Every structure is written in structure tokens, then in C-alpha cells.
Amino acid sequence: DTGVSQDPRHKITKRGQNVTFRCDPISEHNRLYWYRQTLGQGPEFLTYFQNEAQLEKSRLLSDRFSAERPKGSFSTLEIQRTEQGDSAMYLCAGEGDKTEQYFGPGTRLTVT
Amino acid sequence: QKEVEQNSGPLSVPEGAIASLNCTYSDRGSQSFFWYRQYSGKSPELIMFIYSNGDKEDGRFTAQLNKASQYVSLLIRDSQPSDSATYLCAVNLTPGSARQLTFGSGTQLTVLP
Image (cartoon, rainbow over all chains, first blue to last red; front, side, top):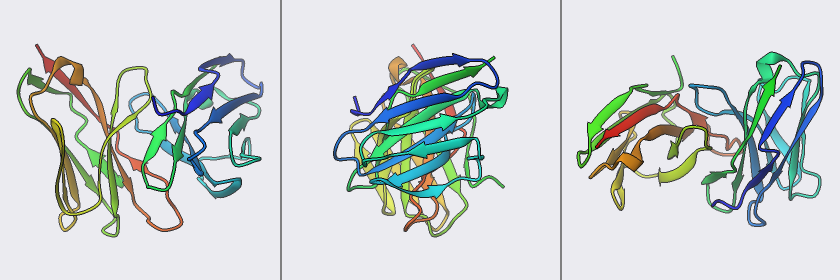
């Protein structure tokens, strides 16, 4: 158990709806990452926070995606106007003083 | 050319054998290398990391890094059926302020009883 939790674990939504995912790292994780993984592929980086500051965003993160980490603890990832291509596993990872990233269980999104 | 490449497999080995998983990366300046294990339907689990050239051993796992050849490998000794999973190689391709990992597509390993 990495101590990183994600909620919900599964989400089914209709195309065009908005969805929000939450990640709770452990207190030692001052850095927090969001990745997306589709079937048969490795995780792809989406965005990264150092405490509450969002320091890096991937080109994959379209304008429909937004992420926050308001108090440097939990983080949320929102997808607006979901599309079928957004169906994937959304993974959150925490990182402390060392450079190792530990993943939560993920949120599996299905857009119908 | 993909930035992190792995043989997709599938790789099958008999129980008790050594499984060898390979990974190459594109950026010669990369400094941090990780192996994750991912069971079907689960999230990746960090099993090994290596930063310096040479070998690093942890139980039945050995990570090997050759920066000159831009090559990192994972050896699993005395393979067990419970080792059957997809193994993901991950590299910090741009050390410094950008800390995200770039993953390969994974190698699917099956250990046959």
C-alpha cells in the first residue's frame, strides 16, 4: 500500500458530461503527478504539482482538462465535455524527497 | 523513434528460470530509471530504481544500467507464477525541473508452472 488513494475507482459517464477525480497522497508527498493510461500502453504524463503550484503540463492536457491542488495536499482532475477518447485509467502518483513516484489505485473512466 | 522502448513480448519463462526484461531510452542525459510491475486491472507498483551504472540487487530482482549504451534491464531470478505481470520501464528523460516519467509500453511476462 503506497498510501495514495483515489476516488472514485470507477466512473461511467455519458459523452459531454463533466467528471472530477480526486487524489489524496500522503503528507510526505510534496510532489504530485497525474498520468493517463490506455490499454496496452504505459502511463502518459499529464501534469505535475510541487506543493500547490502546477509546474508542468503535457500537450496531452487539452483545454477541457484542469487540475488543482489548492492546499498542497489532495488534488483534483476535472474533465469537461467528456469525449469517448477520454476513456482511460487516470493515475495519480506521489513523490517525496526522493525521486521515486508511488501510484494510487487509479480511476477507470468509461465514456459512453 | 519512441523515447523509451521495450520488447512488448509476451515473454514466457518456466518457473524457477531467470526472466530478462530489456529497455532502451533516447536521451543520453537521463539519470533516473525505474521498473514498475503492473498486474492486470491494477495500477503500477514500483519494484526497482537505479541511478548509477552497474547492477543493483534487491531480493530476486536485479536492475542493470549501462548509460553509454542507453540500456537498462531487469532480471528476475527464480521466477514464480506470481511474477506474471506487465513490467514497465520508466525514465526521467529530462532531469532538473521537469520530473515526469516517460514509460515504455511494457513487457508482458508469463511464468509457467
